[in-house]
Every structure is written in structure tokens, then in C-alpha cells.
Length: 256
Image (cartoon, rainbow, N blue to C red; front, top):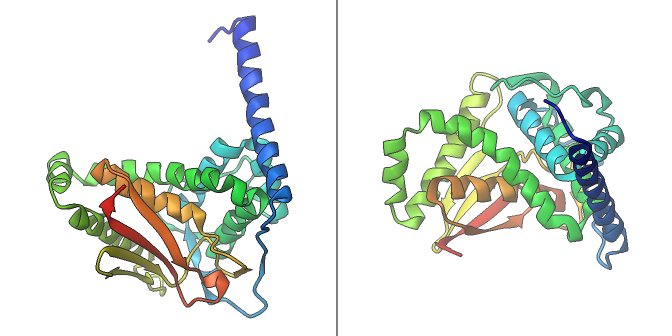
């Protein structure tokens, strides 16, 4: 495809704009009065050693690159000793990786959160939403139009339950026969639904002074929107990095 001089200048300007935005968020995070403190757990966290699905890692990396840029992603991968993933994403296979773990995924997610801090929280959540889109497109191939249309007619509470149970089922299928359990529970809490994860891939092996699994906030938000065309309040209320037994999110049954 031929590009004019103006096209090239516009493309370069957008690239610089993205670089500056990423740098500004990181700088603001350092100046924020409330600092996130994230470190590695001293005691063994068995969740770290679970194999991560290759598709999960690929979609996360692609979403991070789209939001913060290639150079910033490469910096994140270097800081987490995962330079081998630079320009070398895992294949888009719905199988468990033989050389990447939940701990590797958590290292990347937590480093993004640590780098951009509270001022960049919405951008980190956007990473989760973007990362969920390929999974939902794949899910759409099996969730036929008629079934999806019928689901949209359900009460909001049942729509949420349908989405959460579908996510729970997907994880169970991925880990079937691997010797690892799915570790996902769905719970009805009156005016909320709870999504409970005993081995969260966003914070496995980490210690923090606040909830840090923001990427999964975005994943839940986008998954709910895909089926319902509505927005729901998604709030993390427990985090394994803070010493809780699970990472738990509550979703209001009423739409925003």
C-alpha cells in the first residue's frame, strides 16, 4: 500500500502520542500520594506453578501492547525476566502452556499495575476488556445467535449468572485432565453475584497493600457487556495478594 508523506507524518505522530501518554501515566503514578506496594510472597504460593493457557497469555500481551505501546510492553517483559516473549507471543492455542505459568502471567499483570498505579487504573481495566474480546469472539462461534438473543431477554440477574457460569465452564474445560482443579466458584449474594477465584492469574505469588487484579475487572466487565449490551458495576472485594483466601469480585445485579 502506498503512503503519502502526510500519511507517514500522521502515523508517526500517533506513535509519539501513544509513547507520551504511556510515559505520562507512569510519571503520574510515581507522584501519586497513595502508592501501591507490590512484592513477591516469601512463602510458596502453589498457584504460581499452574500452567497458564496459551491463549490467555497471548491475549493479555496483545491488549497490553495496544494500550501502552510496544516499547512499554517490552519494558514490562524485561522487568519480569520474560524477554523471550518480546515479538514472540504464545500461539493462539486453547491449551495449557508447557513453559509459561500463572506466576508469569501474574508477574506481567502486577508489573503493569505497579507501573501505572491508581492514576492509570482505567487504562489497566481497558487492557482486561480488550484482552477479553478475542475470547468472546471465539465463544460467539459456539454461542449461536438464537441462544444469545434469547439470553438478552432474561432478567439482568440471570444474564449475569449465565456469563459467570460460562466463564467458569471455560476454565474447567481448559484444566480438565491436567491434575489442576478449576478453582472458580459462583455465588448468589442477594443483590449481587460473586465470582470467586482461588488461584487468580493476576496476583499469584504477590503481596500488596491493595486490590491489584484490575485486569480481571475489565475481563468481567467486557464479558458481561458482550452478552447483555449493558454495563454492570464490577468490584473486587477480596484479593489473595492482601492475604485473603480468594480473589473475589461482586457484580451488582442492577445495571449502571
